[in-house]
Length: 240
Image 1 (cartoon, rainbow, N blue to C red):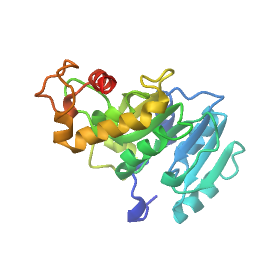
Image 2 (cartoon, one colour):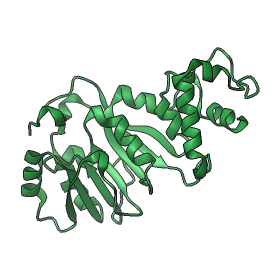
Image 3 (cartoon, rainbow, N blue to C red):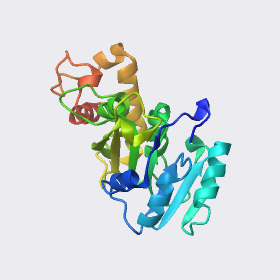
Image 4 (tube, rainbow, N blue to C red):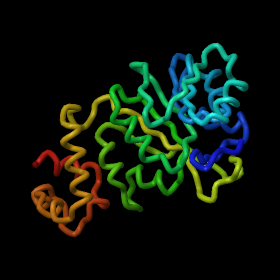
């Protein structure tokens, strides 16, 4: 289903592909799951068979019409006409499984990871290059967003996808990215805003970063913010 340019998105070709991807998640029969940018409902329809309740979130008029036609009769599905970035989940415990517009990946993660309450887990189809900046690793730089969410969520790439899994096929490689809320955050929740501000200032100002007690935290002065591990960020934050 073609979309307006404003809502550009690559849709999965078949329910079989969706079912395989959900099999790589921790979504279970008693879960409430949000499908953000539900489109014509291909993910929603499979989620409805795998979970207790599905909230299909969509705002684009043509997509909403298709969504109502395709899944409007499913008893455990609620269609929510709302912009993803202004959505306020109405459940204390919920999960997310979505094929989101790639250009909104960072905004969507920030919107929900730091929400109250945050989801128990998120499964998002994103560009591989973006996912690698979110998942800590020794073979690449990590992003500011990765450092911000690390104390509160674990992240990993669950499965790579083929370009032929989509219509239209994307020009970039894609993966299923998992974000799982930690049972015990590595930083007290009341300190989350201060910690995030510290990380943001460190990435935005080299002068600010250089003033931090990196030597006391056993961090090489040659390392840039994107080269620090999560453990180093935590050590540095605790010192200040």
